[in-house]
Image (cartoon, rainbow, N blue to C red; front, top):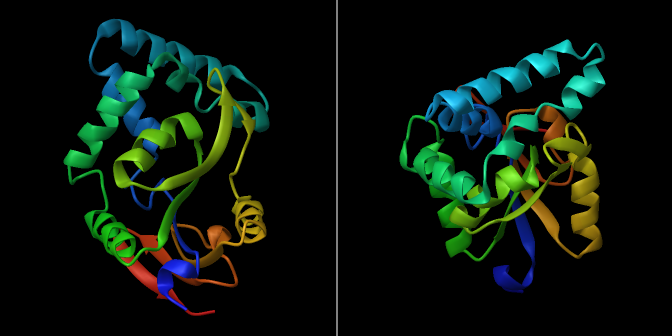
Length: 190
């Protein structure tokens, strides 16, 4: 059976793996740096989030500031991030290209909201499974719940071959796993 017929998937996490920090925080920082009004919006949203007493509500509001960034701005900021090597794990971007040349399906699986992750996935030619938000408020969170995505992939006849992530919680016991810490990629032996 050819590799292309096997429908094997290579999974990459985004935050602190493909991008050296949280993608949404980097996008918010770049966006808010452009005008004083945007800095004010960002500070207000951060203060509002901190004022929430319960951690689960703070988590739901973590991406609220991204609701103020248009789709076009997200696309342009993502291009800026990808062109600047200080934010991107360039070795992993090269690996994505290599996997695609070998006809593997590359998928980004992230707790980052889909709206935020989609421009990055589009630029890399990858599919994306991500958290869901409405107006920047999380409605379906994938943080530490990627196992459910892998099960969904298997149900769709996709085999998760390899996972790259900064967290052991993201690994799938039926795949090769690579831990990404401090820009170093290490194969994890089960």
